[in-house]
Image (cartoon, rainbow, N blue to C red; front, side, top):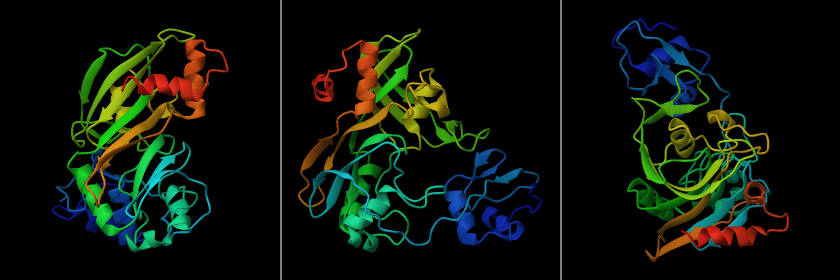
Length: 316
């Protein structure tokens, strides 16, 4: 689509050219980075200069109402303000194109119907997200004050986040920080990428253990500490320096023995909304990831998940 209305706002231009899409649907597509100008994501207020290539990836409209579903969720902690859960791999956090139901939000609404009073949108109680195939600790706000309190900590980068990640290859150096802007990949709209005009992103890491592979170059188990919270941040950053995460088919770490990326939100630390007490919550590696490590180490099948995870926690 060639933009020929010089000076026109991008959202108005799309509304005129895509009469079959409502303005709300267009706004949702733009918010998810599915509209680009010359390959780069652009805001609704962007003024067309003339001659640009405007591309829009149309996805089905999201549901307008949320369905409570009796889906089991692992609760790590709960008080009057928050709920801390251990999200399994394979569960989407909130309704999205292709995933209208069966999400963490659907499960939360069955347990906490009052969440709908926090946000009339599709993310009630959600203050941060994990990718579908990333497991681990998440915090959910049960009221508006708690939502604002935790959100401020996230915005101020005051929350401690520690992930366990298995990188392909022998990650060097043993400690480091990756600083690289992240945005939608202009060549593949399903991916994110390091792009000059992307959003600021920073991830530090520390090697825990180097593991042999059945073929070279083996693997590296590391802690990752994301300072920012961009979509697919850890996955993109590790891939960008040549060490994609094991099992991550989207970013170059495909491994037939894993049906998900090896990335787990291990520790989450923040201040409680009412008392301001700093607390930390942790979740052990899921069985399938712990078993994969045992396989790489050449351990016997009866090595327990608790024993293996305990060795990791002692190094934190």
